[in-house]
Amino acid sequence: MVKIIPTYECVLESRKKPDDVAVALRWATEEPKMFKQYSWKREFSGLVENRHFRIVQNIDYRNSFQPFIDGCVEESESGSLIHVKMAMHPLISFFCLFFFGGIVLEFLFEVIQSFGEDFLIRLPFLVISTVLIALFQLMMRGIFYSSAKKSIERLKDLLFCYDLK
Image (cartoon, rainbow, N blue to C red; front, side):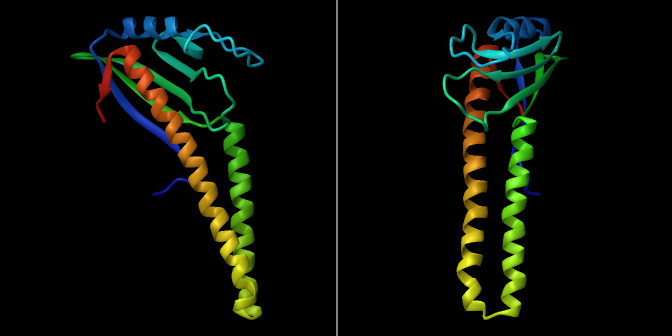
């Protein structure tokens, strides 16, 4: 099933013990700031508590679609399993749903109107709505997944991990 708002989940495996993974995450993570300042000292900002973390990668540019990384670390036979879930900020997700819903409503309105009028008159509006739906989804997914891929690669490097699933 295709989700309207993109998310990304994966499980990473590390040979490090869970406490060592937590220490490495704490070392690479600074406390979140109320207002963004682009003088990052660490690679991530957020909270790392025991074996749970909620972080975001520090970047020196504006990216509203940048994923928030939620995760937990659990012990395994070979070291640690790191369960990672990435999603956009809740306010950005709400805005995207609102915007996407408006475009879909416009599309449905045009479909209904095309039954009452000449179809060729409504066709340009149907095409525009369809193109907007496709472009919005491509833009949102492309930016989100490219940022998610960079964040996962950095986590793998930091924690000496590899993909399990």
